[in-house]
Image (cartoon, rainbow, N blue to C red; front, top):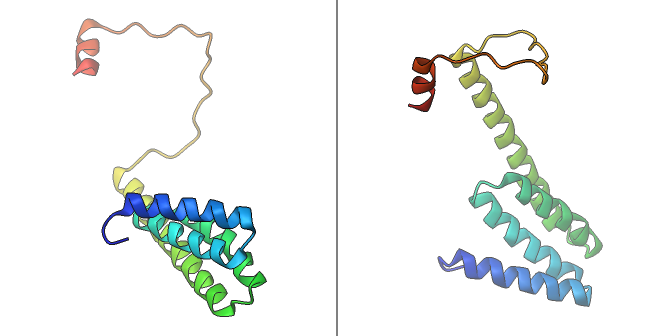
Length: 125
């Protein structure tokens, strides 16, 4: 990529389209791996997982067992990252001391309470 991520993504996407049209499994999978790596660097973990998961059977078709194991490791590391992020989010929510309990249903036909001028100014601020 040599520091030019935008061009790299454009070229990998173009190459992926061409290899898909020609039905060249191994090259398609390689492009997906690289695009997934870029997505991971940009914190788009779901896109990275999707690309790697799609590349996995293409490597299997091409008898690339090392590459399949590599993808499994990547997916596992992302899963671990997502679990860690989830734990951090739960810890942050606990720090906020959000009230626990059921939320009463809101009646869409109910009248909205009147706000005092002072409340409106506070909300606007």
